Image (spheres, each protein chain N blue to C red):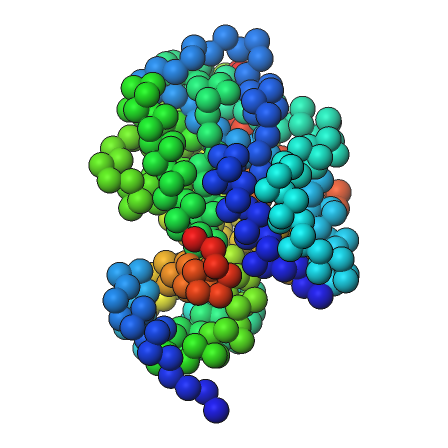
Length: 101
Length: 320
């Protein structure tokens, strides 16, 4: 069973860098993403928003596979800054999993 | 076994911290392109290469080796490799494997750009061996501590030379300096412009009407992050080049796959293949504006079409 991580949830809450509040889960971002991974980026952001850290950790490869090409943000009706959110997740993993800063 | 993300990122961050670049190169290799051009050292306005064009022959040699390692058991040794790299600059050995012909090719592109700026009557200097890599890759990978320190180092370098305007040659350096640095370095107030913006604003006139047909591959970063879409089209249009646009272009351009080369080579090649197919459908030769796009798409095209740097066409059109 997935559990909510208070650490991830509070990191997201305190951060200016992760903001997907405007996301209405329309899925356009996933449809236009050149990678074609189901997890990127909508589903991943949903896991982050609800603090499911184990789900985020299961998808570390996908997080680093994002091209940061911005096709998703260009076509996002809610104008979510998706690349900044991905960079935030990488930073979180670098610091908390990889011991890199 | 996939390539180990943690160890590769660790090597990149260690290199930036210890040797001021993710893939440290000698000053001779980063400045070779400028030999004989008599560019003044320093100045208020400088041409800033960020080492991107110079790095491609090394990245290319390294990528060939990394592709062979992907899904092999040797990847387990990357942790050890990171420790060795702290003591010995392993990029030096990759540099020895770089193709001399490729180095000459990428050096020429930088000479094109310097020549175009001179034709446009732009006064500029160059920092030669003092110039630093921008930190773009470390920024993209979210290694913010190492990036912040490096951004400050570059800012201090600009201050030391009294630089107030930087002319960049590639999208990654442009975006890192113009958009990322102000978020990491307090009071960063250096003006940053791509050479394509500078040339378009100069109103320079072509020396020849080329009459070529060309497919332009827009860089994701230039188009979507830095709003550089019309400038290359304006410069080509004035020189009589007719554009055959691929189905995805301008703000909706498709990535070349290059950003994944260091961590996921197979996926990088899959994306490059998709983009090469879209460009091939135009039945035209292709021009790129980024050295990473160039090397990715050249490999993906496998000789089916010519892929060249935009500066080659511009140099021909504007009499460089």
